Image 1 (tube, helix red, strand yellow):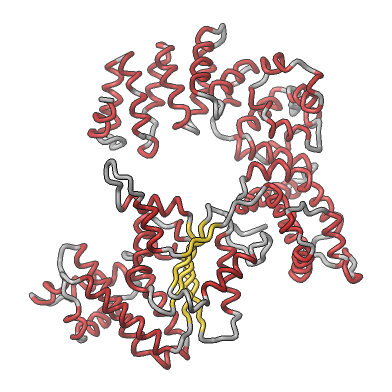
Image 2 (tube, rainbow, N blue to C red):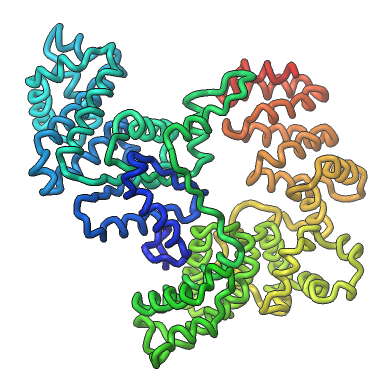
Length: 627
């Protein structure tokens, strides 16, 4: 199994990025510097940061120090700015050599950070710090602040406050109306401490910033820019640019009709050197899946040998697919027998089988994972969980079938659930799959138009047709009950497979709700559905079942059904009221104008409900409704 976090082994060939950032971080010519490592969730940013930290830690120059900070730890603090500053100062203080040189300066900086924290707390409480000190004993207010944001017991907090109050120089440096002066003082003292410490460079590596709340993201970036960006410091921040942009836009909303992109300018002012990690290609994802299997079976030394051999052959640079033969030839290099390199409990036969399984399905799954290595880990973890569950319960499974069904589950959950409904009605056998399997290998065997009358269009997408051709084929002849039993977490929710719809009824549901369909074609399909001689009630229930898992994209369909089917309006009104605040965009508010044209009372009822429940602000509703 693989932990859902950064890997310390470079199976994604990120070494060049790590080397580049390592060199940049230690360059005196461009110091101070803030480097932004940009990439989507799960793209491998943390892995690159681990490689950089490993390189810096291995430096022979001991005057270069790295500090690895997980920004998520700041979520429990009242002020992320001071939390980051305190982490950095405490880490430096833990270094005996640095403490011997600048221990006093570090203590003074830490005390100043405490004052920043307490001053901010007092202002948030509506009680300026110095006013409370001037008109009485400030201990109760300060003690409450310390207990809220510093994990100390009461006696420790009291002792700390007493020490702070005795330091008159801090009182005179903290006029409540001179924030700029205090920031300047801290920067000056921090920079002087760096000079006196003898450090050539302090590299602060910040990970998981994009997992934090918007306020914490802004506070952390402000701390870097305002307090800590001084000579001999380098920051490397791993962030998802879209997440940070959202945080900035929340903090600094765009002015009406302004062309200025505030979020972009904000990030550019803090990050001087942006480095973007590209999404993995389909070939790279396929290779990564195979390497994950290798990591499970091989000891660390042999895995290193395999990775080094692949890099020497420039497999990653050339964008080549790793073959089983190539893996075998590298591992057997220098006369090492393949059957002695495996971890305890693993053997050559299982290794070969699982490489073959993932070699076959990786083509399809790599397209679905969209270049995301974390998703690849999750897929393969789920595979091994189900494999282990089958072994515990003595279920006889074909690992190829298990992997292939999981690929459909990841690629198109609706089709996976449709297969589930087929196997339920056929005592474990998805007989309806047989014509589709035949069509995938010989399109001339059946008339495409006749096929589309029986099956939803999703079955004819290229990726699904590819899936049908992947070995093992002819799943329609396999008892699938044990496989769906292991996947019950994906089929247990209420969905259309539980409604006993016929093939024709399922086709109507899927054709109306299919993703990516042009809106004019969708509306035309709904009109055709209204005129068709079918059980409208069952099909509408199927559409509602889909809506319950994807409200935003299917709301427009339900509103149109509300207009066309008066008998179902009360039922649809209940579904409308399941919308949450995050799903109620101005566009969705406008959709209810169609309800108003049909039934004003229902419209007023919806408006009252959404406003009273705090789902939509009255001003927003009225503004949108007038359009």
